[in-house]
Length: 308
Image (cartoon, rainbow, N blue to C red; front, side, top):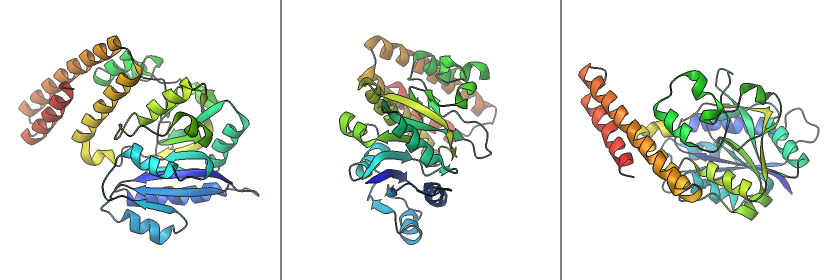
């Protein structure tokens, strides 16, 4: 049986995707007399940059699924997960580089802890510096700090869903890892179901981890498994639209898992924050720091979110 199925969903990130797949191949056999048996799935969401052809040409061993349209992150992952043969499934963003034996460390930790249903890695910025890779489930403080960050101590605190840096010295229990690198037992997928395809992008991994926890499984971060994460390489291509999608997904998450009072309070915080951002945009226009076109695009996005 295959040990690990790695699933990478791509959208116009050809060069990063190449580096990601090279790192997966290297990590799978890194300094090991008994390398992991790994299958790689690439699901291309209608890229226009030749990503699919690059995979066909340079990684013929990868199993490639090419979509005619962008079906979203959750749906694209599900296409591969349903066909995966591994005991474990790893969701991996194309803007990542797996370092050394990270794949083996993730699988070994899960295999050695039978109550652990999902595992995340330690993410690093491209320069090797620390990047928050694990988070607590959303709370109202996190909604507030999105718009009113106050200072770096607060935004990097537990109030904002972050874990202290000293926790990353050894494996520790978490609410959920970032979806850029998320390993899940295939038996857990069979139990709790696939990713919810109502999430086009954002929050699908949070919803999944909530369901995994509700089913009685633990979730851990394994800091010894290190992965470079460039971040937002696909979503930055459509910033206004992605902001709207972020809040749409959050609203869906809150509808599924949170109380009516929480949802009402969160909506008020978001609307207050949007009003502040709109005012800041008007000031930036008046001082020549923002064009009329950019302001109009921002206001249109804010208005769509405000009406949700």
